[in-house]
Image 1: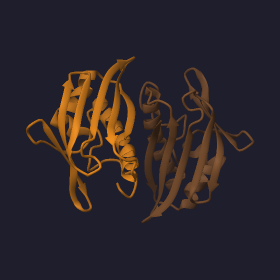
Image 2: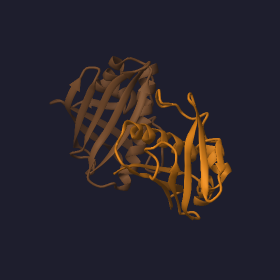
Image 3: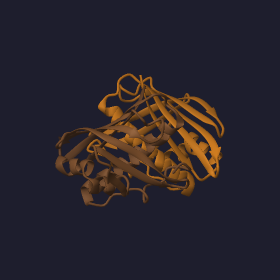
Image 4: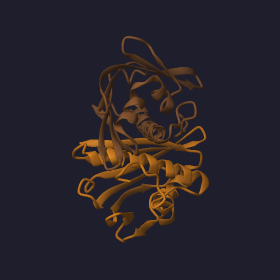
Amino acid sequence: MADILHRIGATTSPDTVYKALTTIDGLAGWWTTKTSDAGDDVIRFRFATPQGEDGFDMKVLETVPGERVRWEVVDGPEEWIGTHVRFDLSQEDDYTIVMFRHEGWREPVPFMYHCSTKWATFLMSLKEFAETGAGRPDPDDVQVSNWH
Amino acid sequence: MADILHRIGATTSPDTVYKALTTIDGLAGWWTTKTSDAGDDVIRFRFATPQGEDGFDMKVLETVPGERVRWEVVDGPEEWIGTHVRFDLSQEDDYTIVMFRHEGWREPVPFMYHCSTKWATFLMSLKEFAETGAGRPDPDDVQVSNWH
């Protein structure tokens, strides 16, 4: 098993970051504009690709206001299904720290390398969104390679 | 053991990326301006911190033109010493793909989360430097949190 780990800090309150992780408008502000509520605690994230629409469905496993959000990937690329995503929030100095983990990858496949870099750019988008109200969600996200 | 993985693609030749990874001027163009040759195949990287100068010494283990660069961390923060860094280059479409690995962390400590995000921003700086000749090395690097 292999995990993707990241740590960012946003100069804003844990509550602001928590809202960016738990509301449709918040998630649409930094990850993908095509975010929707699919019912049954499932959030649907879609991305434009050259091959058409692609994306992930996340089952919300746990939300603790200002502290923690946990998802399970219930639909999406085969490598993602069954993996877990978690955001742990805390306060340090003037920052809300986000400890991020996308855990349970079966193999460190090239797609995992790609997703690790993409997560970093999206977490930087989350930081920007939480601090200023404007992030860089898909389709205006940062391109890191030929895989976008 | 835990690894940091990333994948970026730069619209330039493998040779250009290889030079950015194997020359003092290249490394100073995307990682830290305070890069120097310490002799005996060791490259010294220094960073300005609020506590003074900090950094890493890398022993160059392997260089294969246009293909691969491998380093061992021989001095620096305790968590880094003995870990290995590698860059594997290949060509896909119009891109030079860099598969990056910082491997052999003993524990997934918070500092590893931080370094994973910082590596992503420095690899984006490498991409920019290789494509345009101007990256964002320390001290003008992207700040990701209170740990800088």
